[in-house]
Amino acid sequence: MHKFLENLLKNTPVVLDGAWGTQLQLKGLQPGEVPDSWNLTNPNKVFEVAESYVRAGSKVILTNTFGANRVRLSDLPELANNVSEINKRGVQISKSAAGNAAYVFASIGPSGKLLMSGDVTEEELFNAFLEQAQALAEAGADALVIETMSDIEEAVIAVKAAKLTNLPIVACMVFDCGKEKDRTMMGNTPEEAAERLISAGADIVGSNCGQGIETFLKICERLYKASSRPVWIKPNAGLPVMIDGRVCYKTTPEEFASYVPALISAGAGFIGGCCGTTPDFIVQIVKTVY
Amino acid sequence: MEDLKKLSDAIINGDVQTARSVTESALNAGIDPVKIVHDYMVPAMNEVGRRFDCNEYFVPELLLSARAMKACLELVKPKLVSGGVKAQGRVVIGTVKGDLHDIGKNLVAAMLEGGGFEVIDLGVNVAPEKFVDAVKNMDANIVAMSALLTTTMPAMKTTIDALKNSGVRDKVKVLVGGAPITQKFAEEIGADGYSENAPGAVALARKLIAA
Image (cartoon, rainbow over all chains, first blue to last red; front, top):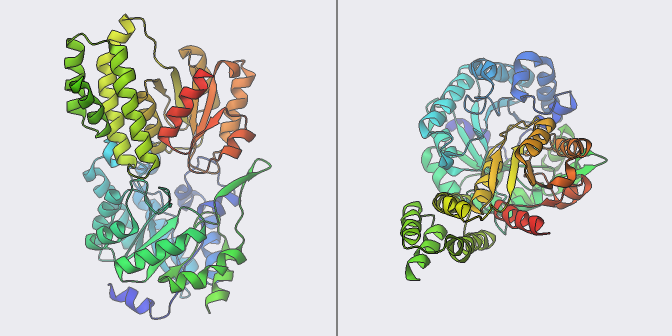
């Protein structure tokens, strides 16, 4: 494992941040608007989200760069042509919010295309992830997080591209398919994912998004066994429900945090939240672990 | 009918080449195209759906089988049309306004095509009025909407309202799907059906058309 992560993991669990997308929506991000574009147009709002997590006690915050890759933005040329700048600004914003209180792990999300359907080639994916990873590294990210992946083939390509920056790499998948909800969309198990991602060069593997936090215990345990390393865990605040025409997440920060000790026993070394989680969730996690 | 058993197997195994060649020789041998579809192709896709439900199959296998099915249907279709047999139905499909995700939508479109439906794919970020126009101009009888984002789920209701306001709601059955969608949500917004996965969407479309 990368030395930097080894040092960081001397004090586990490392508390991560919560959701960005749902927080930006609260600050006025419109449906269909690309969150990453706000790094250029609304940097202050993005900074507020980053800072709210630092204040809540996150020791690692991510960046607002989840969707900033050329393939994902291919229908929006004005953004696709600015992909490097969007990524760099994302890291700069998180770094200025983090100061000396937190590290900045830069986010790399999926392309939104399916390799096996032929909508994108392996080479196009590799180049897009490399372009993004290099911009994130140049701007000073401490590590790269490849997240919310449903296709192991795409995740492996992203890991290989990201690895060329020599930064530590975290790679995590969504496990929300199959009867037991323990498979990726393409049918891979946590064991298969851990094996493939680590041999591709990931330092840490994990799981994010997907179902509610209760389903992560088993997955965490399996990833831990298969990878023999502390696991990265970022669950949603449950599945969204509609209340009076508005989308809500029902899990409370307290309920969420009540699962943290079990996650630690199951091998989690990094714990934060995904969609629907807020700084209050991080405050509760911090209370539970320190 | 040893040969046609091979057709079912080829579709189940996602073997496009074999599926196509067996279909070709069956047609050349003068076997009734309706029989090929109903007795061999459709049951094969049903078996694919069953395997998906049992966790034997996942998305990659679905895609391969749908591809094999589609290839065979393309061969059979001209004969069916000349024989006066109509498609199962015509589906207008799209990801709703504000949402750019297309993986789930494409998968459902492929499965519906494999299931014998004619599919008109409007793409992603489809405005309600585009759905309405397509229903009017293409004479569709099913509208299938996809949303991956919780923020774009309400656009499904907006689209259903637009169909109502332009007087074509009763002409079509409305299907919805996507990661954050639930049966309850589908009922709340007045959709006719919801499916959790792509094979389920085909079964649902058939059921709604028959109703």
